[in-house]
Image 1 (tube, rainbow, N blue to C red):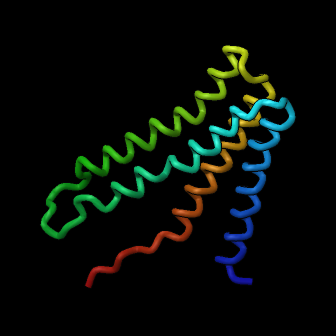
Image 2: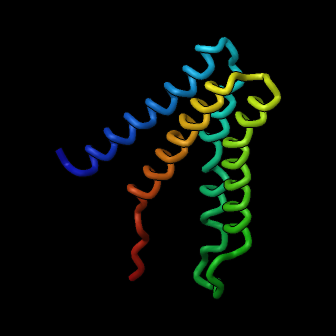
Image 3: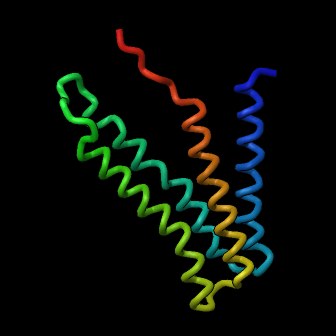
Length: 128
């Protein structure tokens, strides 16, 4: 097997474990609010991906344009929300502490898998 296929298999296994932890955090305690964490972490890379191509023309003389930084800022806000939401729900007594921990670990695995996939298979632009 090639290295790319092994990477895809490993990342899909880690992603499945992350989603399993999030679903188990909902099902074991009969409260489906931690499922919002999966949605948050799946949507987290979108602003970064959308704003990554802004300002990448040949005439730009600056390193990090404003829209790229805005995309990174929005992405970081969504990621912090994904980690903080289960903590706030557990603190207020809406979900159990075990569900909070499982949801955070599962969400971290999901987001880490998305980041690892995007960096592992990033195609570099070649300039001639």
